[in-house]
Image (cartoon, rainbow, N blue to C red; front, side):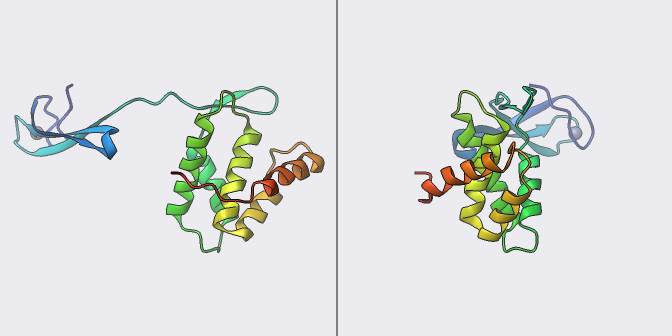
Length: 157
Ligand SMILES: [Zn+2]
């Protein structure tokens, strides 16, 4: 693998250290530029296939973690929910949905709601009230009914 030196743009380096990182999910290589001698680090990771979400009307688009964070953040405005919690929420939603054969935009919304409820009740209610994924109030109530059946917080083992 050739990497351009961030200091001098040279394309030749030597690896001075290789180790596992991110719980074995990545390989970290410390490299030394053969031209300027400065060191930099590269990471090799498995490329993850995008998680496809089917929207209303059948349009499919890749799951957008940033969009989930942004939506949850607006619901959590002025609430004691920090960005770390929101990023963790979006990651949990993605991890949970990757186990599903088909993912719809409603499932994304419900997954966000479930976790937001565990974080902060007010943010949860705000998100629920503005969430546009539901066809009508009946759908919304049905989904909330499903949620209230699973009040026991699920913790990852
Ligand atoms: Zn260099």
